[in-house]
Amino acid sequence: MISVPVSNMTLDIKPQYIARMVGVFRGDEASELLLENLDLFGSGFVLGNSLVMNSSQGFTWSIDADYLSGKFNKATYDGEPYDEDLTYNSFRIGLGVRYNF
Image (cartoon, rainbow, N blue to C red; front, side, top):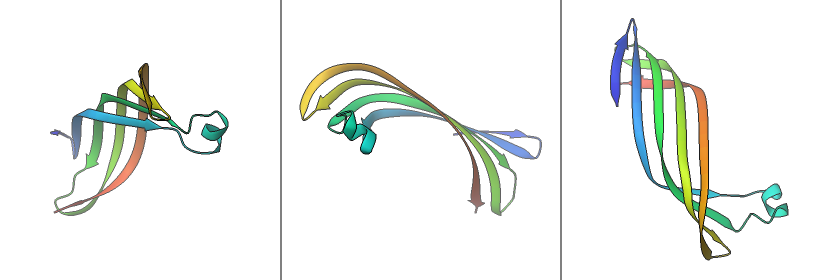
């Protein structure tokens, strides 16, 4: 994690590598589409950022933005393996509470 001070806040930059990513389908719609037995395998990366309101100790607030990008290159259906070529992208924004020691 890289932390950069910005005024009375801190910007945390958190790049991460995902060595093994698994995708599964569950629920009624997956069952209707016959996808319940499909499992996807791959890798990817996450670029996470947090803007943290500075506090010496105790609780503090953070605004988080995370971008996930991955590629599924293997799959199994009913245990039968086959090659796949699918990408997955996700962008999430959140509000968090942290405790600083």
